[in-house]
Length: 123
Image (cartoon, rainbow, N blue to C red; front, side, top):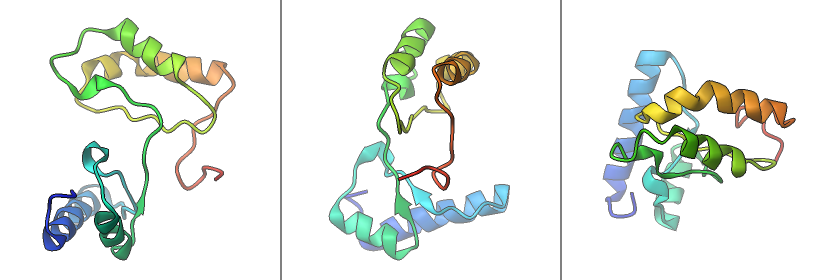
């Protein structure tokens, strides 16, 4: 987003907002900058549109479709890096994530953690 014009940032965000609302009836209020790339300018723009930026504290290269079939790697990467307040970024195009999600959710809960929405998250 930092390379986009102000108007393009606004249109990208609001076009997504419209699609999400039309398809799911959900009013978006959080934004994760694509690739985690942002600038003070883009944060100011998204804030002016009513968004709160949310980043992640745990991610790995699951987005790379050439790096699949690593389910044990995915499990270990997630479980070994879980910590209080973790915000986990998992990409929907990863078949590994689909295959390990049940396991990691159960394991994280067994470790004593709970899952919360950003709204519920104690800051």
